[in-house]
Image (tube, rainbow, N blue to C red):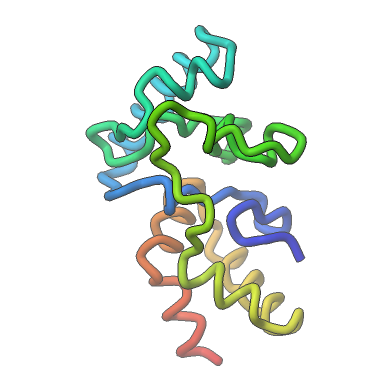
Length: 150
């Protein structure tokens, strides 16, 4: 089973751990679009990540989060984007906490595959988008709902 952060079964990525506070969808979307444009303009991952290292946008999201594809948001410095190399830790001002794991992701990794599948089915039934998935994972609402149903 793929991790909740980059879950293939759901087809979404979560960026909750890359936001100190998440404002409304429009504010977050505008920040992500601006970040994505800046990334396309700069073209170099390290230069992009060092431009405002350690900062968040007014929306609360990290300045390094970009749209990787439709419904997929991530960091260009993440090891998944760099053949296993973690460029996040090479920034001038390291801001990331790559060892952080939200409660849902941590618990998910401890469960057997049958319990994992049940959570995935619950999440798929919600017909989530990038924002609602990340918000619900970050605030533990999906985990709490799931644990009540178990």
